[in-house]
Image (cartoon, rainbow, N blue to C red):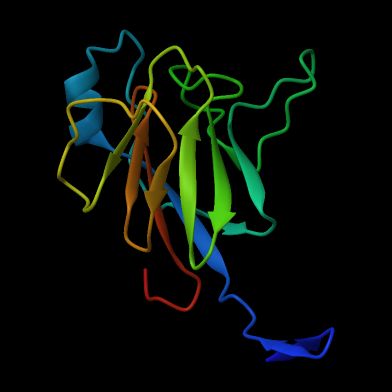
Length: 142
């Protein structure tokens, strides 16, 4: 616990995002891009209160916190995670292919989110041609 201005507040437990190549999502996308070899996820610590999900671009000065550079179906500025209480809110930033949210891996969502949507530990984001992002608390086993 920390003490600030005479009040006690519990420090929020750190979160991570696991970025996966998902063959099942790829099958639903009809993408012309070749599916990369699935492997272990890239684990990204979620530090800060607003985090950009997208693809790196030096020419457009875009450096996302969660870089999905290998997936051309992900927009440069695709979505944003904003810390809210003990969880997050995900918002699509006008991406070309939408942002989809599911409560569990394997439950492929049919419709993209239209407005900011609260997400909790275990939530799954699907975007681009094959990108699956699983949000979890850092201490949770992967």
